[in-house]
Amino acid sequence: MTMKWKKRLAIMLTLVLTLLVMPVVTVRAEGEIWTHPGDGWHYLQGTDIKVRIANDVISIEGTGALPDADYWKLYERPWHTSSATHLRIASTITSIGEYSFYKCSNIKSVEMYTSTFIENKNAFEGIAYCPIFRIADAPVETRMYGTIPYTSLDSIQAFAQSNTMGACYILNDKRRAETFQNSTNPTISNVFWANDSKAPWNSLQDNENGNQATNICRLSANTPDYSLKVSAQRLYPGLACYEAYAAFIGDYTFATTFNLNVEKEKKSVYQTEKELEYVLTIPAEYRSPLRSFRLLAIGTGTVYIYDDLDAAAETITFRTDKPTTAYALVYK
Image 1: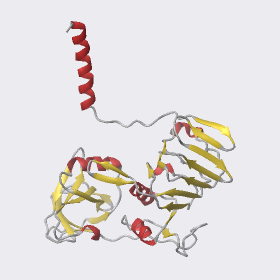
Image 2 (image 1 turned 30 degrees about the vertical axis):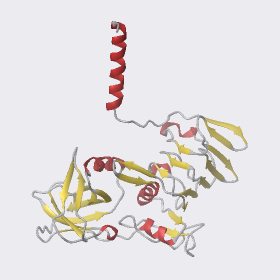
Image 3 (image 1 turned 30 degrees about the horizontal axis):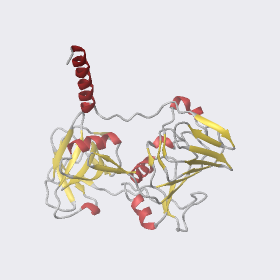
Image 4 (image 1 turned 45 degrees about the vertical axis):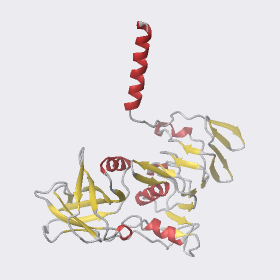
């Protein structure tokens, strides 16, 4: 083999090894180009995504992901200046990108399916106050973070837990509506099933529901401190948390997530002078006397692992001096 070919082979092997060890990075398309042939239709170049704006409706059709909108170029969205009040998203749209309908203040109702991911709560931030989300059934899609599943329905519930628009959500059946509402603590506000006479198809009126909080964490009697206020919420964390949990979950199975907040004189306490013992209620759907539980807690640059110190099936007891943070409940 000549020196020239040896050099080429060495370069090729270096490239292959580099590709093997490099992390997989997903890059979202930037600078999307929309074409407008007429009759209210707009086509996203290089994709199957198309939009029609007509008769007071913005219809998103095609197959695939509606990409992130460039925050600095929101005016390029075909619907940016539309006065349409209704938005319909086909079940074949796999995800709604960031800033897609940000500040589209005329949109009062959104029709979408349980198969579609909402990539960020800002996708619908700033639409009309008290909008109505009609969420119809379709096969729920799943993304995996290591061994941790994250579904399209999870993403919709994560959006619903954090919106401040006074939105309501109408789902196909009563059981799914109840599960949707009770997926967080406090419960998601204003969730209805389609056949409920109180379902607000035009306006929310006086039928608000949800936003009910249950006390699910307390200091153990073994380490009392009456100067501290302890509260916990069952919430969906950011996706970076799932990635961190996936790296440390081992042979355990992911259950759910919590935020724990310890306060003293109305200020959050991130470090206590000594370890204190906390008792966290395990959601009923995960309880079993045959299971062992632990908590994974997000720290600064690390993940802390707390094994269960009690034998009760309905609670997990743990000790920490770094209480206020996000936790994942896992079991085996």
